[in-house]
Picture 1 (cartoon, rainbow, N blue to C red):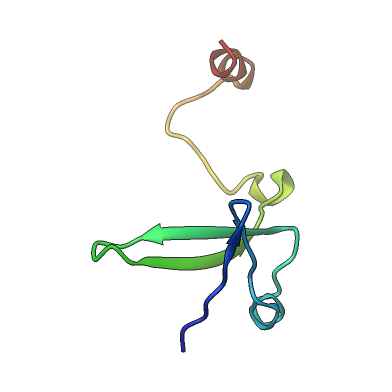
Picture 2: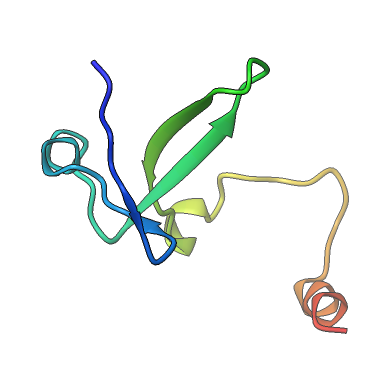
Length: 74
């Protein structure tokens, strides 16, 4: 079943039944994935907090967060 919504002021609305079914709130990221056949897939996921990411990732080489931040804001 397809769902249609309109765009107003460059924004659109996610229908209420989808917001409820997918538990969509202010902490939800909407991902638009372009597929090879020029269609789009829409996925919903929760924002990750820094605390949730802490310790989940690692690098092969040492890094210096202060230097990385300086590079970012040059």
